[in-house]
Image (tube, rainbow, N blue to C red; front, side, top):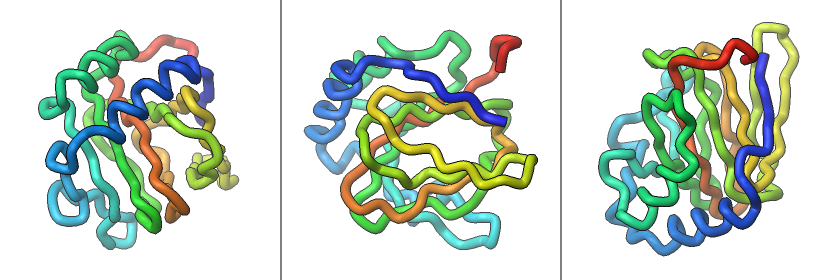
Length: 160
């Protein structure tokens, strides 16, 4: 099961995207080399991330403005052409994971919920999808630079 909603305006998404594109590469961590997110098959994933405790001030201000009340942690993911995250589940301490997409036209997210069907979630600027952290999902190789915000969430509303 998953939920999709328009979480922020296109203007807000564009403003955050601009700040992330301006951020120096030094703010990002290569997840293939550090804190690797392994696939279900044990292969490393290829993408970069900006951790919450090391965001530049302008990015932090924009991220804090959209922070859901039940946030445990927020992480920015950046993918260059060809980067991806193989099929995996987050298996973290937070029971839910939300992802906010900041751009349109990246149709690269696949969800594998327990119903056995494959669900593709097209990117739409400002859209957020929420899944249980135990749900298998993947980001297929991107065709151009892509940014998203990953939110580890704890105390969810009853309507999720």
